[in-house]
Amino acid sequence: MVHKVSAPHRRRTLDLQQAESELHFNARQLAKELLVGWAALGEDDIEIGTVSGGITNVLWQLAPPQGSELERVLLRVFGDKTDLLIDRDRELEVVLQLNAAGFGANVIATFENGRFESFIPMRTLKPEQMTQPDMAVCIARRLRQFHAVDITGDKQPTSFATTRKWLDMARSLDFEDSPAKQAQYEALDFDQMSAEMSEIEEACLRIDSPSVFSHHDLLSGNVMVSWQEDEPVCSAVDGSTVQFIDFEYGAYSQRGFDLGNHFNEYAGFECDYGRYPSKGHVADFARSYLAEGQSTPPEERAVQQLAVEANVFALASHQYWGVWAILQSRYSPIDFDYMGYSQLRWSEYYRRKAEFLADLGRFLEQAK
Image (tube, rainbow, N blue to C red; front, side, top):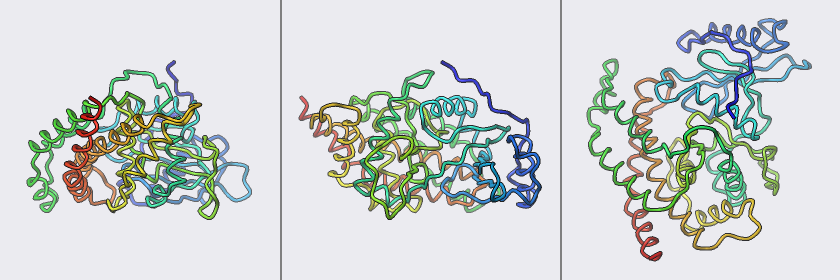
């Protein structure tokens, strides 16, 4: 079933290069045009606050006056040139299907380079909070539920092809406005990156990782929970207690990619890879994932496979985001050191490569 957009749409664009005061004025005007009940609000009635957590888009919270029956909303403005990386029509189609399955913030209205979404009254996690054993169990269970959603379209895995496409795009960039970035760019070895990608793709294909609809970007800012920091983690795991948001990189991929990528995100944007989980933690996460929705515990062989699978796909995740960041360093208006981030991702890839490939080799040898 293909989900059609029923939310109102305006052929308007919010220009992120405008001065903040002008940009906020235009955002308020757009809200008054698109959101039911907001037209009568005055300019000073709508409070705008920045929402942190992502390095692809600009996110704001728009709040009506206190005492109003209207509810606050999230305004998502797509990052400049991100349509080069993300098919926005496909993304919206996916978001609507995931909304119907109980995932994410509901789409309220759309415009040319963004949309209004319902505001989820939950808190996002910090990277170090994802490492907590009880929290990891909840995320693992919710991830298994997410992977069970059937999204329309081609179900062939895409992550390796996407990284390849981005690498081809990255080969032809220029940074004439920034000599420092240009020097960093010219030092990149794209042929070596391509060779590494071929090696890891071949390794990943040696293990049977089923194709599922994958989030691809399950970092701490995209995981929301209902309980407060001083409360015990709730045992019930569903859309009212654990939510995933931001599906713009969502696509079919091997199951292992989401797990390995999630473990990489324990490091946060500061790339503290000392937080990467231990083998015991990875196995516990895999066990919780496989047990979700099942009447009997998973076999230990399946747990071992998923643990090895997650770690080897963590290498593919470093390549994916390492190449992505090169493109972002050229196009994104967000104040973030994308080129430095790319270098950190590739450095960690090389640091863990031999270990994770050796684990894969031992697992496959034992399976003979």
